[in-house]
Length: 76
Image 1 (cartoon, rainbow, N blue to C red):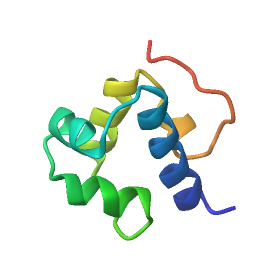
Image 2 (cartoon, rainbow, N blue to C red):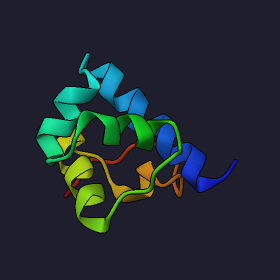
Image 3 (cartoon, one colour):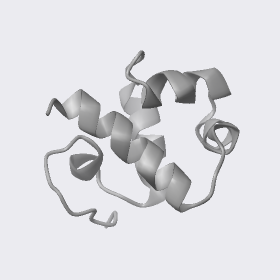
Image 4 (tube, one colour):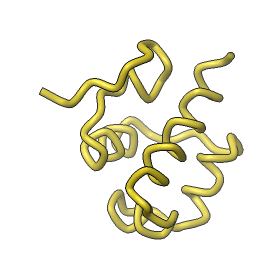
């Protein structure tokens, strides 16, 4: 599986685990809800700044979100 596909699925999984709507995550990282939809459906990539914001919001490492490791690790 491509890392992009893993990223899309993991962002969505983390969001749903917190029972958040796409608009909640969008507000937290400073984008529109449609941007989150596009990210989760693989239609759009994200910037390093937004990747870092997602990591901080969910307290997980970028390695996990990018599919480089399988277990989520909290930020140090």
